[in-house]
Image (cartoon, rainbow, N blue to C red):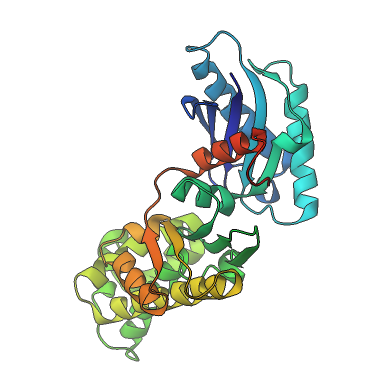
Length: 325
C-alpha cells in the first residue's frame, strides 16, 4: 500500500490529507498559515509539520505503520524557482524529523511543489486540464491544457491586483457609500448597510474603522457580503460593482482560454472561493457571460478541496503513465 501526503498551504491556514493509493483519505490535519513570504520560513515549516502530525495520528487508527511514498505541497505565492528551492529545503527538514509518526520513502520525482492554484484545479475537477477561477479574499485565474502548457492571470495581491476578489468588492462598496454620502453618487442602501453592520452612527466613521483599528485584508474582505446582499436586494450601485467584478473575471478567464486553449475546444472551468457563494447570482452572471463568448466551456463548482487535489497529484507522480509536475 502506498501512502501520500497532499498539503494546501495558504496565507491563513494549512490543510493536510493523508491518503492511500485507493484514493481513500485516512487522516486530515489543519494548522495555521504556511505562506513563508508573509510569516517566515520557520513559522511556515511549523504549520506544515503540525498539519502532517495531526493527519498522520488520525491515519494510525486504520494502519499500524505509515511510509510516505509521495508528497505534494501546494503553496500560495510559490511561482519562482527560488520559492521552490526554499520549500524543498523545508520538505527536507520535515523528512529529517524524528518526531513525526511516519517514515519516508521519497524519490525526487515524487516530491511535487507547486502553486496552490494547480491543486485547486485538480481538486476542483478531478484532473489537471482546465481552468480554475479563484475569487476569495484575493483572486487568481490559472489554466493548464492537454499539452501541459499553463497560463496564469492575476494573483498579484491586494495592492497590485486581485481584481474580482472579495477585498476589491468590499473596497468598491465602501467607496460607493462614501461618494453617495458626499453627494457625487446616487443614493444607495450601502450607507445604512455598512452603518448597521459595523455599529456606526454615521458612515463617515468608516475612517476610524479602516484606518485606526488596524484592519487587514481579511477583515476588509469580509465586508464584501454587505455589497453582495445589497446587490441581491436591487441596489443600483451595489449591482454596478458586481457587474464590474463579473466583467473583470470574464476578461481574465478569456485571456487564459485564448492563450492555451482553442476557442472551439471543450474546456472545464471550476470556480472556487467565497465570492461565488453570494446572493447576487454572481456565479450565474459569470457563467452566462463566459458561455456567450465560448459556447463549449463548462462552468462548475469544485467537486473536492485543493488538499485532495494535492493528494491526487502526489499519487499521479507514482504512476508510470500520465503527466508529471
